[in-house]
Amino acid sequence: RGIPAYDFGYVLMHAIDYATWLDGSPRYEVTLTAEWPEWTLAPKDRLVPIGSLEWVEGWLQRAWGRSLPEPVYIPEAFRPPRYLHRAVQRIAGPSAPGDAPVFVKSATRYKGMEPVITNRLDQLPSDTYWISDVVDFVTEWRAFVYRRRLVGLHYYSGDFTVMPDVAVVRSMIADYTDAPDAFTLDVGVLASGDTALVEVHPLVSCGFYGFADLPLVPGMLIAGWLSVLCDGSFPLTRF
Image (cartoon, rainbow, N blue to C red; front, side, top):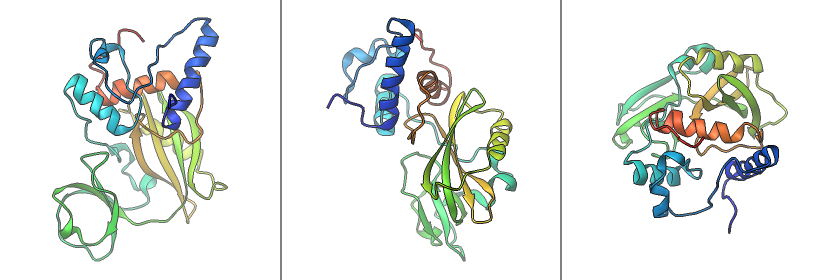
């Protein structure tokens, strides 16, 4: 239809218009497409694919012969109890069934098995999983981080009148010393009032939930692509 399919694409288009207005001339070139035209493969070091995770991975495989890296939902820096407020571990499945249901999510693919709550770990398909205690998040928010700085905090689930503790969020960012240049922290508030990490995402195909810092958005999306999907090893010659 000639418009982006996702909120981050929509915001990006406005951010590009803003950059053009600010500079008085185009800073970025944009092509809206649902395919991977042949012309996109020649200057691949100049291009940043923005779209669904499946579309981005398809472009990555086609242009670079690579797949997405394994997700790092719970980096080592966030595993202390003061950030998680629940037991979390990585296991190989299938595994012995547990006494109580746990939250189960694939640790090897972003779009692997749908997350489930179950105690029948013996019935899981063969894979590696994150499992965690089941907790009740009263509210959940997405923190946007760019170059180790908190640049946005946006509600996405639960009670929007309950705010996470921003001091705790800043502490998480400070402790994540090997973080990529651009990423999101999903955090929630428990019934106890504690702010806890939900999970971490690279800033690739992430919902913005109202985040719209126009001067920052293009650079953040470029950084998300370079530092996470490409490990910083495929330099962009244009940006």
